[in-house]
Length: 455
Image (cartoon, rainbow, N blue to C red; front, top):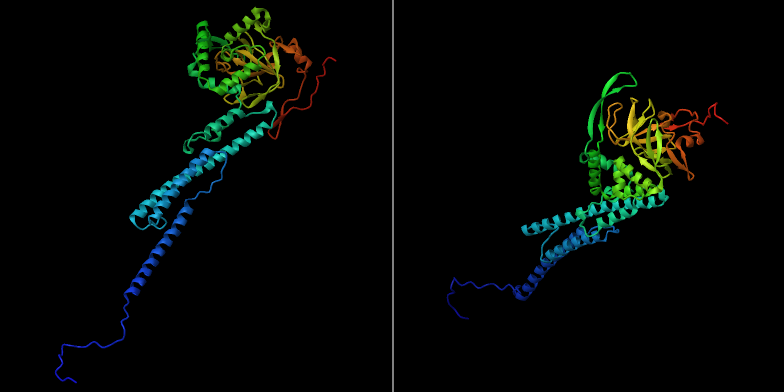
């Protein structure tokens, strides 16, 4: 055994057994931990991607609007593709944390919100479509004469609204789709709305004896000179050219139902509605050609030319009234119409109102209502007593006319007769109870013949 001194700086390490450090095992464990972290991150991304994609899916109930459906699906596909592409790049778009993730989330969310708003509009369009479609279906089940909806025009509106137009630009409100069959009342409203385009006749002031008081007062009335009539005719023709299609269709239908003036053009027929002098020139021309339609009639103390009126049983809505059984009549020139003390009415806006103050009104007859036993006239002047605007419709009970209207010619069963004779056969002069009201509805009591009726 060697002997000597041991350097105190030297300390021998004690033996603790074999080393626990294994470089290979360390690398394996390190890689496993890293893999688990990456796998966890990938699982989180996959889970968030699935949730995000699910949130972007839309619940659509398809209907006939194929182009609208395609527009919505294209937007959804773009949102899904953008979301998937960004998720594959490692962005968490359901629980964004980084500035990049937050910006991407905002972009996709804003785009998707716009798509949902489009779906809401699409659903509103579907409701309008369903209502209009059902209305057309129900109307088509009625008899032709009772149908109010223009089915072809409505279908055309629906087709246009759904074809080649983006959902945001569509106007599929019910009022934009549903088209009702034109009525002559729409024409009158169109003319009323454009009165500023029609020249006004000259106004004169003259003395007038008030029948109620016997006093002489001044009244104003319009005078239609030949030059004015010519200007008015030209104005009505210009108005016809700019008239909407539904109103033109109403004129066409009215003309085709007119057995006398159906040979006119639609434009001439429109002019004849508002320029009686033009209508009479046409009637006189027909009579001059040997057809002999116009005849001389004594309307009170004035002689006028009239065409025998023919019966019309089609419904004629006029404001809050609907005339059904009537004889269309007309005169060559205006006549003095006595209003009477009660029962006369005038067309005010969309309703009929009592016409008071008595007196006479210058007007031309339009038709005789069998059911109401009254004649509807249209004024040809503006006056104060009673107050009456030019071209205003008013109705006068036959009893208020005295015997002035008895000679008006009509055609009954193919033979010419007069209103006076016709009313006798219909018992129109018999005494009937006054109209009574029950629950807000009017009715007429049982028919009671007068005691002095000839048997």
